[in-house]
Length: 475
Image 1 (cartoon, rainbow, N blue to C red):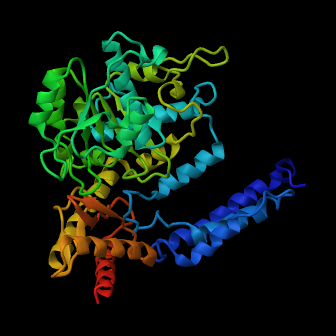
Image 2 (tube, rainbow, N blue to C red):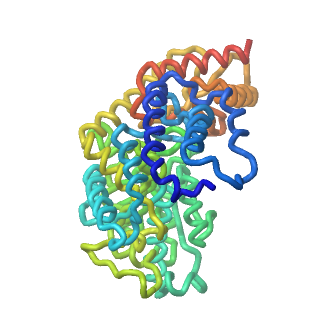
């Protein structure tokens, strides 16, 4: 029988197997196909009945490494432009290994004062990085979706309180529908958060002045004036199709004028605050009631990583404190139980890779990364402008460029079908990875640049491969 108790001496050797595989794998990321078709058959080797008698530690780890390095999507490489996904910096990746090594219970201070203290430190560093007031409360989450849920849960509690109801204790029975207003840039993750919270994903009222989704401030103000009671505004810092931004400062003005709650979804766009060249895009975020962002995007730390910040820290406790239980400790400002400040009770110590990468590269390193990626987006925009068979659909955003392949004589329907086929073949080809979207009624590519490894050669290859596949499809 293979019992872990009988194989504890294999632990160090198993970790060495991973470390030995890491060097060659990481060294070849820039040369690998992002998605290698040859890896697909390996997926079947994962399957089979649950073993009655295990293979043992070392054979199992060797097998997982063999299949994983061959079949995985190499999304941590420099040519993965899909879904706004970053890689992992060297320090963050090592910090994540430390997280697994130490395996801390991160939600309760008595279980790990170390994990709690690291989380407190990195939340302070992140507020400093983004220009948020030090007085804001915060919590790490698995993703921007859970960070949006955290901010909007606090908003729901605030809103219900103004109707005389403690929604955490008594629920929403008898309350009117929560008024939520946003632009056409509102992301599905905000709707999903509202769905989970019982407010309804379709409760969001969209005020857009064009088919791109740009906010209609006048119409939104008219609605705010007509709303009976408090409302919630969602500002979107970084729209996923073209990288555009809502005017956060102007939405903050509206929120203050009408006593509304302002939530900022800054999944990747919050990082504009890191550079003086782009900080104007999120001017006013420091006035928001709640702010959400992702770490596994532009912070370039491993999945899963997100964070939420609240103007009033007590709102986190009101929304997420657990019912009394004799065995659960009561925290305070010095000994924080983070499982009472967010949706998770069992929490990985995801602060460790954040601490490692911020300690390693600091403000200057992240400013350089944001500015480099912004410059690469502008380069991609220039290459699209110069190519006779490519058509820009929007000016280059912070780090997203929206364009399509075109051929003279084809109407929009046929161009949509051409770009749909091109997008599918681009993913099958595997040299670069970028997804399609529908923007202003047209099917398009929308590569996002957030990986610390990405350089000019990767952008040039993206354009070359898109044009090559497009030419083949129209030959």
